[in-house]
Picture (cartoon, rainbow, N blue to C red):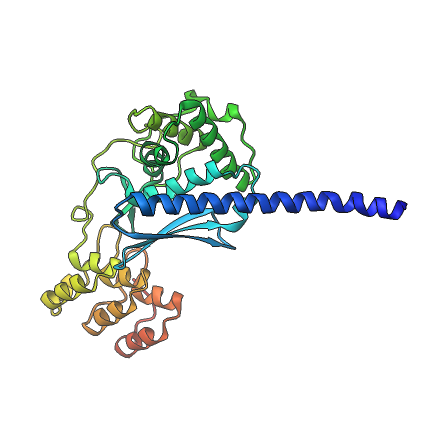
Length: 321
């Protein structure tokens, strides 16, 4: 009898933990399905999108966009569903943030990647979109108290995932915030993000703890040619049009933007290797570049067919300048 009682007492907590985990999974599944259904039914999106759970990732949420297919994929790490602060509300805010990377207003600040002004909004702008445009779709009667609770739990969820425990006091001391001299491309501090959520809900300006308000650079001012943009995005039609015009102009083919990236290095970084092959065959220099060059990038990804192509033409070159 004592053995059975001991086994029951030992087994009961395990069952409770299992049931709690299953409940969180169900909550997560419902929130994700509701989000996807709402956007597919109510929005005229300029792209198709899917939401996928993955087992391993360095961050709990991420978004990618494939070109030229115009397909956005929002990824979430499956174990985030077991986070004690994960609820349908916090998942909805997380998905709103990720969607904001590609749906925030055109005038909003965008990220610069490899010297290319991308379509992807900076992190603070995605937060701002989440509360000004996205959350109201799911919470028509959203008030400040509800927003405060969702935002606080969302930030606690992210902090917990990073091994940190946030308190309410950590998120309300705005006096410690300072103005930025240049708009941040990465995630602002937790307290800055909280201010962004509340300011956005109140329809106030973007918080100056991440947004400097400077004029956004253009791809032209960043030194990018149409060929570079086509190589970066994998735009086959634009690439072939530009290539046909400049195939014999090696100075144009080898031109670098302000980040030291050429059409060749950009095509390799984005895995558009057929475009890279075409540039190499036309005489594009794989050894030029300030930070890195096509030769080093191809070595890194072990693309042997293109390395062999380089080797035939540059037998005496061992490294990049």
